[in-house]
Figure 1 (cartoon, one colour):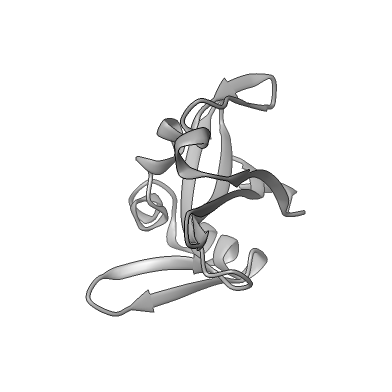
Figure 2: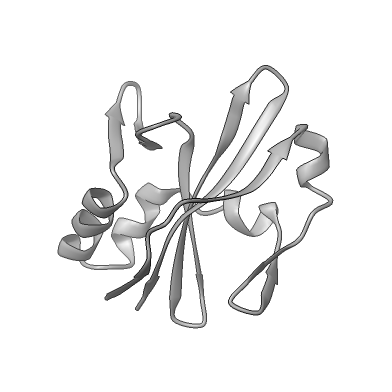
Length: 113
C-alpha cells in the first residue's frame, strides 16, 4: 500500500437531503454518498492486512471507539469514517452530522493498493 495523499479536503457542507443529489469527482470517477456510506471503515480490516489498516489509522489520526459497537471517527470533528475502493485506489472519508441538520463530508486520504 502506498500513501498518495493525506491532506484533508472538504467535499460537502450542508443539509442531509442535498448531499444525496451531489456527485463528486475523484481520480476522474464520479461517486455519490451512497457509494461511500455502505462501506464502514471497520469492514476494511477484512480486506487489507492489519499493518496497512493500522498505518491508515495513524496517518489520518483516526480514533477507535468501543462503546456498544466498534466504530472509527475522525480526531478533529468526530465524524464517522468510511472507505471506498475504486481502481486499486483506497479513498478514506469522514461523514456525518456536524451540527443539528448540518452534514459534512471530507476526503481524509487516498492510498494505492
